[in-house]
Figure 1 (tube, rainbow, N blue to C red):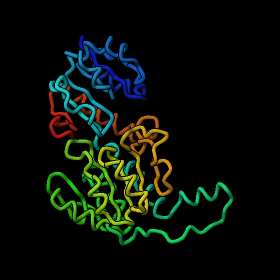
Figure 2 (figure 1 turned 45 degrees about the horizontal axis):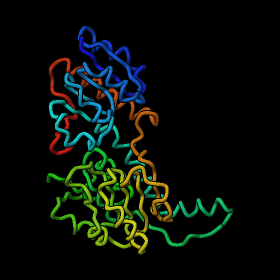
Figure 3 (figure 1 turned 180 degrees about the vertical axis):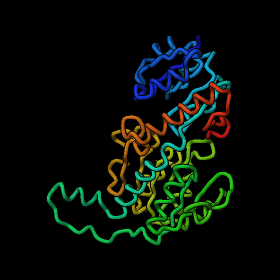
Length: 321
């Protein structure tokens, strides 16, 4: 009997559903996400399906593997791997929009109202007015990426009274809270106009250093920049230089390049920068709403796979999403 390997956390809650869908077709093996490469290879050699965020290098010898369901929205590690081209890849896009958007707004509000500075003063018992603050209402937001996450950010930004522009790779009419949509040829102008720039893009060849030294320099000096997509969107060295020269009112980074950010990296020392360790998408181990969304999608896809139907969230290896 062929095997399906389950590496997602909280599998016990869904064991009955999993085994009902797998009955008479797949032997179910539950592996810890912390298993070693050697242990994984021992069990995965004959697997047809894997639910798990596996290092792509571990899949080289999985000759019978037909489909892998990951719990991430980003698929960068799986791109440009010839030995994966025969494997169907599905991601968890759609499970993270709301929770990541909440993180974005948390970073934006904290930077706008100078909360990190007040927290610093509070630790020393210092009652001090930190001065003028950044108002959100009436500002222009530029959301880089208008998918599930970008749309959720746009909804919340609009609710705070911002005018929201969306940047996407394929032109479409503005929907929901987006006032307008732009493509690459309009990006420079949009950056110059934006008060708030938010990165929600996956890592692809087209998005690498999209915010390079030139574009960072053309942004408003008092703009707020937040990135929750992938760290490679921003030229980190150029960003550090710009901040140290007084550019940007504040910067919030949930993703960095490199990642993890080294202890001695200058970004840690900049007073108007908030760094969180890639936790905006609170999935397994953080919040059950994201866990449930991932499991719902995965089990629906398993039923579709069993029935020979098209899977949801199919990833195009060439596009990277």
